[in-house]
Image (cartoon, rainbow over all chains, first blue to last red; front, side, top):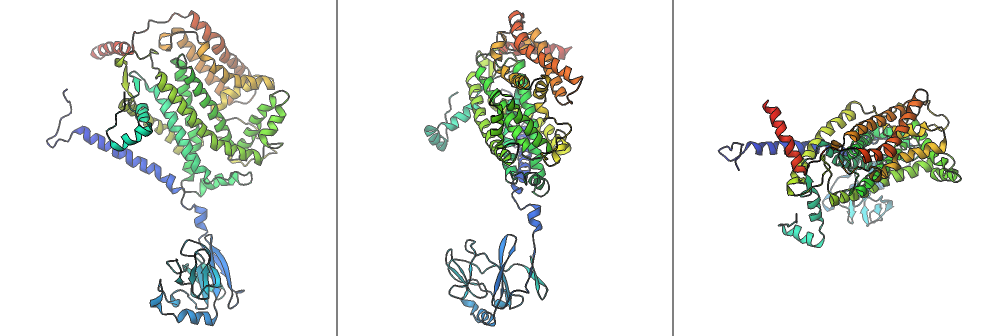
Length: 175
Length: 412
């Protein structure tokens, strides 16, 4: 059989180029067509629009706590007592699994605001319980202190602090 | 023919479950007539559209809510909020139309080339079953957005069953799950709309199984006689089908991106109102010929029976067509009747989309009568009396006969 396609010196035929070019365009086109099917499962515009929550702090007395909802997650807002703040500040950071100073976790020491989701596997910890009088996760036994830092148990990290700012003395905007 | 894998993993699997060999036989070395034209591309295009509909449908159901209070808004949520939701919904809605376009072309291809005749009767039947399932699925899918057309389409079509004597009313109540089209109806339609496409997949597998047992028909209508008449499916027809797919996707995308609502009805962007019927209700275009037949009869039961009969008679086609020659290429009279029949179906489609008033009622009646006359009277008679052109002795001969004349034309 004779070939009508000229073979170049390095053995590459024009047909090889055509195969690769066609396959390449096909692959790129397919990838572009698949992307919308993947992206449709990402948060939709109406979900993204719910990015911040404002909470009135006026009714929360010292030593009590409320749970707000931000992006579908519980957010603990605790009006800490002087004892709790003192306990949170008198810990040797070297001994913590996830070292972080209490002053880095609260803008105003009396207001501790954090996402109430255990960093182990996502359960909601119970307040005023556990070995450190902070939070205790009943699912797998993680103990958090009065600053929400992990002290004992399987959770790897401290309870997360969401972005927030105080609009005035009695209102906080989370998110 | 036989599949002898070299890869040890493939060998290990195939000796325990011969699935790779089966796929290899079906998609790779399936001996295909070497003279298939582009009219044979629509089967694979229909398969592609079934996959497109299932994939986009699964995506849509992730964001849709099947409840009368929320369905309409959830569709708008898909259009406005969900990432690429507009693309998914328009793909699904226009995809349904494209699916019917390729299936109708596929069916008329079969009518022209006599693909329903022995030994392909079961293949033809399975195709008709797929067609019926498609119509049921498309109808129920159209109800889900819960717009005005959805609601009143559901009301009219379910009321067809009310024409059945004695038990008709009970059946309609059973279909509705109440005394009017309401939330129970919407919920069951959603459930069935999700189920039926997978039933279609099952029947498609049977359709392909039957096809690969009896072999593909071809433009000459003559069976493959020896190796010279056939070529392996891959790469010849995989590439041909892929090229056809490329051209088809251009047309699909033209609708999708430039006229996504051209085939729809604006009334379906009005939320369903059980108290007010739109002034002019029409089904989607692919139901129009049958809708025209329904309206052609001034009797409730008669109209419904004739409409279902229009599809039922197609099942009898292999026995109604008495001609032993398959392809219209060698049947001079049938060839003309085919084009008249196609024109008749187009007229029915046109009339179905027009209001029920003169002259459309009369035209619809004439076209309806001709539809049945063609199938029940002309087809058997022509088969008996028609003198067919001489048939080539083989596919190869037919193909080679064309070549010299083409060369002469080229040289002249």
